[in-house]
Image (tube, rainbow, N blue to C red):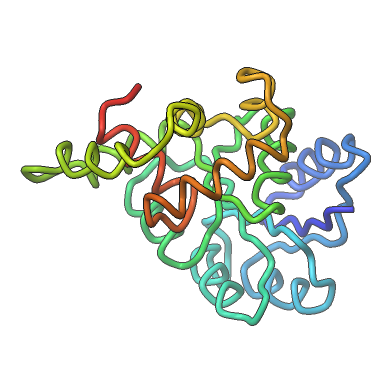
Length: 214
């Protein structure tokens, strides 16, 4: 079971998220929190695998709570869920250790898939967030040439997997599209990150766009 903590100051939002997540038989909502301070307390008490974290909350906001939680030994993975599409939130959340960043209008199936993805140790971002990051990190001369040189080290199959990751597809979806097992896709992604010296899926997605392979 994937244990999830929901942190949001709106009761209706928490109820909706709980209903969506518990429709998946392998996800269990173990606790809820109404602000960042309570999220920290509940995370300590219940040791969830994933924390769904709102940004704007009273007492302590989600960004500060994410930074605190991510600093623990073997911390839960934090998936930031918000209505706000502002660059500084994206960068701050990622700098504070968030493993993902999604909007509250994310379809239910994509939300449960995102929880699974970050629980597996991977990073995930909403497509529009990825575009912001690409624009931010693609500035400066020689960026495309450098990215192409790094991507040239990949095999043709790894380039296919890289392109799919850059499109925001989960491992399961990539396996379906490329006719591979999910375990094989996961192995390819790990190998791609090693070859590109990237820490997570977000970084390799940015590199793919910089190299112009899509």
